[in-house]
Image (cartoon, protein in one colour):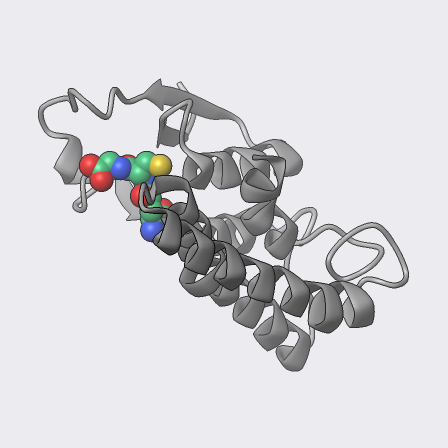
Length: 166
Ligand SMILES: N[C@@H](CCC(=O)N[C@@H](CS)C(=O)NCC(=O)O)C(=O)O
């Protein structure tokens, strides 16, 4: 039995973020697939918001994909997935926050809205965020390689990837 358990759902892009980080670090883990329509009894003990992903490390639960991923990076430092310097680390966190508070909400609104006027507004909002990424991130930070910060893959790549893939 692995020390790390991840509670995941095959359809969930947030859970994919954490699964990607576990794979990248080569961490041994047990995967527990959660049926989100029929959550198992006691699930809120490991995931108080009732959402995936959540992990347990030994007996300790951690939830929220961005928090889990930073936790894993601290506890399993190789390969490191955040830059070293405080300013670069702050930049990484700004982009992770951008994904969570801007890109993903715009994406979800576009996906879910049934009204054509609302769809159009959501599309414009999503375009605005994508253009911002293109100029402020890809145009400035990514020039030395294929990843967000150039040569090395980071938590920022794993944060955005499930939405870019979709
Ligand atoms: N902010 C959370 C979002 C997680 C989330 O929304 N997960 C969805 C599945 S993709 C979920 O578990 N939904 C079940 C529910 O809300 O009951 C994170 O980053 O981990």
